[in-house]
Length: 359
Image 1 (cartoon, one colour):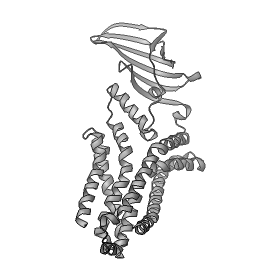
Image 2 (cartoon, one colour; image 1 turned 180 degrees about the vertical axis):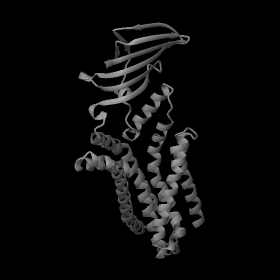
Image 3 (cartoon, rainbow, N blue to C red; image 1 turned 60 degrees about the vertical axis):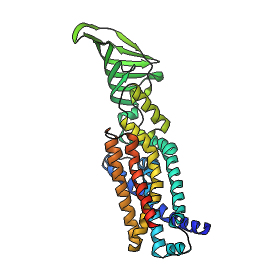
């Protein structure tokens, strides 16, 4: 059996590598096409473009590894059937499920590798890729600046809207065109508007703010002060925004979800990203179960049937995943955990039924 296992693993290796690399190159080409007009118009150095594409490879691999294992398992099993090798194995008393064990184990190995990429490599690579992209397009973020920023602080007591935020000297943050809404108690509202302000070591300062005080929707006071300070501990993320989900580890995603829950903000989208960090790598194992089992049914149609079946499988899976995870779960129509894992559950169930009927 060990000889047969090694033989089947060798049959998986070449189509897996070729399929994965081919799809990665296709994804990178699509990225390059999407940004090509802006890049060529700015005469971006070729080295900068290559660096951006290089740092996008790990994130692309997270989506293409399931495709690679699907193509590999379908082609390998199809060849075993067409050349009657599987028939010989069954005649020797080896059940189909035992024959496919190397495929299942390879799927587990690829799933673990995909999870390691998504958790350890992709967040760092995505941060570098985003930094390269910002420099390519010379956006305000290149200068340590962010525009049109809004956030809530003080457990939701203060709502802050800022026109422009930028790094200041010695670790401070300075900003222009700021509006602060404060609700100190029920029925009372403060509106503070200032042309400029700063934040330094727990002190938010507004310079020459206009202050309106409303009580039960009636204006009761108006004043203009030289400075107004708010004593609150803030982080750079409050001003400059959180990193993108793909730039964060699971721990960082979980912390952001908990922080948003504390202030009553919606967390559906981040929860989808959090559970997808597990579900997408698991899809490698799901395809390693689903693809070879169903490839048994279509293998007699020729070598092309393995490729065609792989394309259809991946297309079907990702369409179900987009509908359940990216649409229904992100809109709150399905719990994020259910929406993200539903495609995996459906494909595993179908594979187990098909395997039982094949035996």
